[in-house]
Length: 204
Length: 202
Image 1 (cartoon, rainbow over the protein chains, first blue to last red):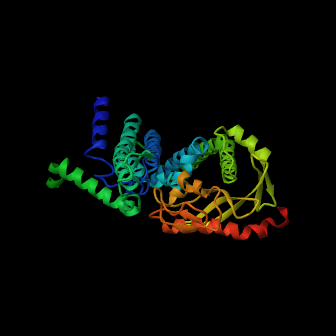
Image 2: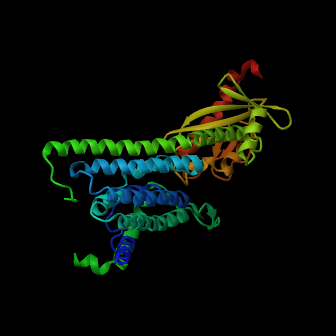
Image 3: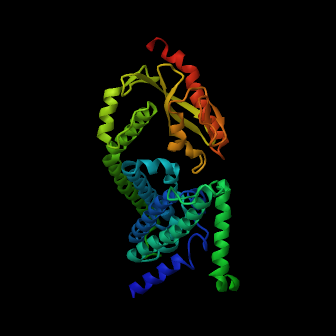
């Protein structure tokens, strides 16, 4: 029974309930870190780690957390995990940490984490919440990776830093700058909603 | 809700304060522990990063291994009066490496610039801290850009990408005009100020 629930949650998080293109949460980082595939993946791993563990912790504490201070408690827990991610990155992968700069710290303000904590972890069992957090993170990650892949390819002619499009390719500089992120995200949501989530979108 | 037993108002408030306090103590302790464990590694990484940068600017091949970098740095580099480094080259010649900050598009750019004993020929440039746009301005830290300065005589003028391979010129980065200008200003600024800083130390 529990397994069935986990599957439902997973499928919802990857598709129909996706945090990025359905709930439109976590857009800030979607726009900011997707001009380079390597940075995006580190960001995604950090986010999956944080949503998973913060959901687990908050769910485990849910019957003790006083209602009126629940936001404070949630933020505190999220912040602790994010700082740990930041410290681990600085100690083990200094180059990537330097490139991501302030964005790792900004995971704290990612709406997805707070959203999952409020909407799911406070009313569900710990294990299910862990699965929900991780799959919400994966749902976010696959969207970001698709966007980053396209932006890096068109903007720099590379994938994962390796040149794939030769000299004949005129680099679309705008794709690696901020406006490119807006165009790409809008196109992405348009395609997904228009092509795959059509039935639902019209009914509302 | 959430299965909390009904309590009197006073007790509930007390519990809230106590709970907040306990949660804070636990998580701050966890973060502090992580920081304590990683502190030395972080410090080592940062200092190693700067040492690599100085060696690269001096035109010395930087070993991949951390311990080898430390050893080479200790043998070759002497910090003279805090404003520049005196580095001994492989052939015994002297190189001066200067630290300089310039203004990029999004924030400061920090660089190490190496000059040989003539003080106008570059031995290397390394932009070790910047916040430029990834894919555009951030390309100043890529080898194709930094390597072009090696052995070039300054001051330098930026040229369209692919046409600046001669003394007095350098390749600009297409799409990053402000960053290119900042890089040029840093290098030319060092060349202009170097005689005054090094003075008799030559």
